Image (cartoon, rainbow, N blue to C red; front, side, top):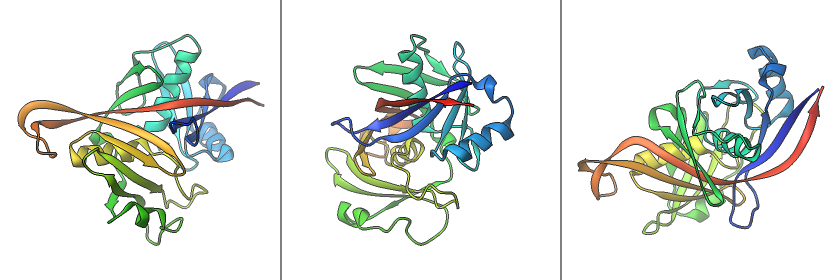
Length: 239
């Protein structure tokens, strides 16, 4: 028997919503990719994480249908859980590379690179009301990240995420990789309200050359911080 920790990641200010995540602290209990994929499919979360080496921060991420090199909400959730266990790490190591971690009050932050967050297409709508009115899923193929400004001056965004990949995840409640892509495209910090009430904070890293996409001094380096709240849901026993 081994434990499965179920978390909610990118919870809203009232500790509501957040994207469900499954984390298996003892990754050795499911040593092969086929076993891990089968468990992720059975659990049905948008992602499931297997911790292979807590001390090094080595992790492996699966959707119900695929293995991922990088994903935002699984890494934020895993970083929080390791700290909760009393084993905080400064770096997580998914297949994409080294992902720095930090904690700031109620928020857990990771840092990812824009080139790791591929395959999700941000599409801007004219208003938050149009985003809210979309069917789940909208017609079409491929990952759609629908967004609109709620308050452009403040950097507040309304978003919804639709994987449209043929599994049971019709709408993703909170999508860190897509938030990273959008932040890189806009070149500015964002406060994203996604799904039913989730919140994702982002901060691009700016160098001193050129001009950022937002019109300020500096250019986005491609490295972006993703931050959010995490809440525990339950611990299950896996046979």
